[in-house]
Image 1: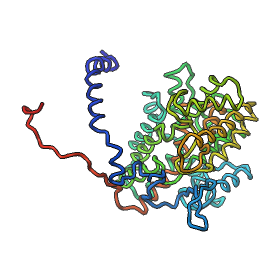
Image 2: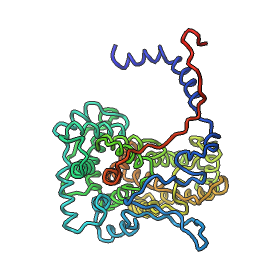
Image 3: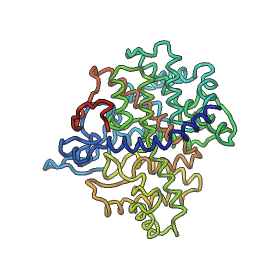
Image 4: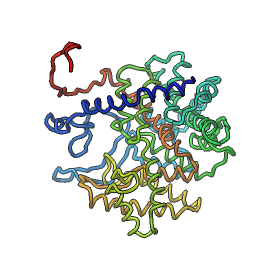
Length: 460
């Protein structure tokens, strides 16, 4: 009996009892929602208005969705995002206006707190290039021998395996931590692409090819270069992907995966364990997997729309909100954000990228459908939901469309998020180690009733 057969036999043997015990465990584990109000507990670290509870300080990025008027009232405003004090619009415009790729420069800004000089950027890029190669036989021994159907799982395994190849894996000095972080920033594109290629070979009819990165190319260019069998890509494709990496590189200390970075780092653990934990957080469909749901939602709309009129779109979206269509969750994916109200600046930038790419690829009608859905969905949600702030499309609304137009497998969408966000996680890990000192330990209020111990033979 092989391992798979053994697991199946255990499922047949214990399956019914596991189901019974699971229901028992869930019933005895569920907290009465009224108790959160009784004890004034901010569930999900958010207040009743959905605002996050302040539990730390950061200099790495800033998000603004409200302004204070002359009377001291909070008023929704167009969303703002700053990396180390630099407005994201200015940052992206600074790269695009001069025809430069910007992800590496953005990583430098996040890590060191200031935009680099040309010499500093050249040195930084050279170091990333030197750190990029994986250890000898790593692709064969770690990636190829046991490929996973989930790329995020594979990324986490690769990161934890790199611990074994590091001579100083547990040292948390500034120099060692920075070296580890820069190696991971440089290597993440390879880990994501090679894991995907291995999956394609072993789990689909796809062919196997492993392209080594080109030292002369940027991270965005190398991603497309390594992903495509013919290594070819257009300048616009690379520029759009580079913009996606910039916009996904960082988003404040309060998002789930970055908060995970702070929590795990505060325990004093190693860089690889910290990053693996953050990858586990990002894998969750409520965090990094949202753009896949947007693409799946548009697959549904294409099959369900009677025509492309506003009325037909409104009917389909209404059915979704009423939990009558698509996945019956009552959600319109890609709409709304935990922080932003009137607009998500990342979405505004990606909308322009999506239009340019759609024009190049002859997919303008698809872009137009996305734009109309965004407007109609915002109107419907405002009508049908009790909301405390505006509803607008978020970064996931157009990123999935962009990745699809680039011909990327949906299994790569969240790993690409990680390829970018490793820059932000690294900056936050360094910030926590440099200014922390105390392990993060929030308090939980115990609400269970006390009970006596009953001897085994007397239990019923």
